[in-house]
Image (tube, rainbow over all chains, first blue to last red; front, side, top):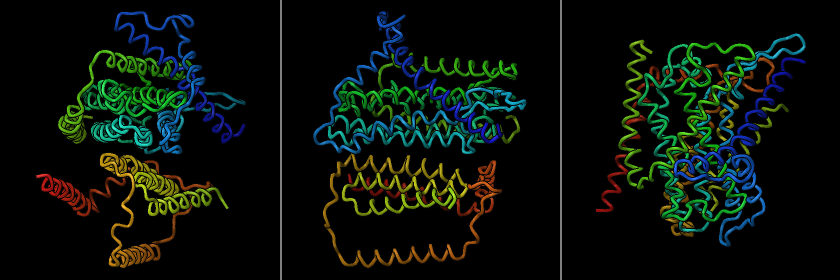
Length: 346
Length: 172
């Protein structure tokens, strides 16, 4: 097998692994987990009938979504109305391409050993690719709100566009600190830096807090789920969506949550690394994947925990927090990291 | 014809066709969406020129932020249809032609004066981007082009303050 062919095969295997795990296994599990965690927090059993511990509940839900009637409002713009769920889902699951989910896996084939880095695409603009994709994802929500021809949807879409732009700024500026210390936008180098020095969360706790809270706003999760605030907007931007198209918005939200958790882990919590452990060989590679999955799972749990614990913000509070608190604080964090770098401390 | 030429042709066709759609579309929302597709075409062209950083910025800043703001305003004011030919003053037409000619001349002149286009490295079909172009770009921006860079940021600040003052006066 020639090296080129091997590279293609390895890339294909990695893509199949990541999307297989994320789409086929993790998203249904996550929806089940959300309902079980919600039930746990509210002191009730939750879905526990379909399969062991209710694990197959999501499967039953999926069949329900497929079977239901797909309604399109009469005066909706058909093309854009049908396009919107795709624009939400596709960027959400594409972001996983640049996240390093493990160290590198040595593969011996035909007497030759290849070192396969466990990342699908190591692009040199790194996390900018992810920011670009998430900013495209907004169009799904905005279009859903606009083309539904419904007041509630429109309000949800308007809120979403303003919210995501406001928090994207704080998120981006606080992430710059990480790239300044690592000296690169590529996520594998960010992880390598944290492996050699210290997890970024320690020196940059302010940036980490801003980034994590902004990630909640970017993924439309409570306490920032104003675009679909059910108490005032029925269901916000997806009020008019039913059956499988609704399921796509639903999966998009969860995929975004997984991507945000993975990014938080990679930027601030050492990615797949643990201090003091060298991840070499096949066992090391598998261990690093497990470490990464465990850390990401922890943050996903925090996402669920916060949702069922905190009430929703008012819209003006949301905007005040984004522009008057987070933006100045993230600039302050940037200055602080710049001073650290200039003093040679980082 | 190699892959690069095909991608170039597709991306430029995308950009040109959708910029025309943007011009002739009467619904403001669809104009904005066409412009998004145009920016995508331009981003692909940047990637072909081995400048993925510019491509990412193009998508983040223009498609992801500025055009979302456009959509926000259009949706907030609920503009359904562009007022059909409200103003058809001749001066607009002539000024438009003048602007197009000026811009066209500028672009032609720059293209003629520019050096040879970059050639793919090795036998690969695409240009290989530099390993780390971003630190280089940062250095150039803050040394050789410092004055222009700062002047541009002051200009943006002025525009923002100006817009604020204009809108305040309207509401008082």
